[in-house]
Length: 149
Image (cartoon, rainbow, N blue to C red; front, side):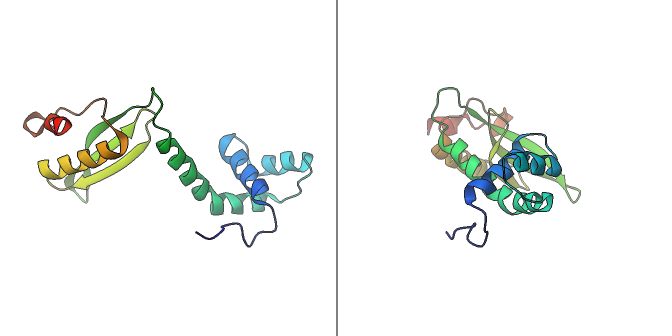
């Protein structure tokens, strides 16, 4: 992967600091500009906005990847969720693997309530994230046998 900071005159540490200040704290672009000016970093609020648009998704993906990799701690847990959604007037079934913080780990959508596809999705999620804490009750489409096999 190429360095995303290669065409910028500022150091990657300054860019990361600016973006994380804007994202993490309830500050406006001009407030971030003022705080950085007090620290001796002279940038425009439009630069903060540009860096946030350019590097925000990259930093969010890194954070998300680290959070998923560190799921080995004892309090981390996830569950499988089934949601009915309407897309263009048709009902679709949306299967989601959700962690305890509400972060969606994986998504699978289908038009029909297909047991084989749901089991395949569950087994793939179990390979990546381990045993789920709870499964939705689905009547005759129950996914409990997937846990044993």
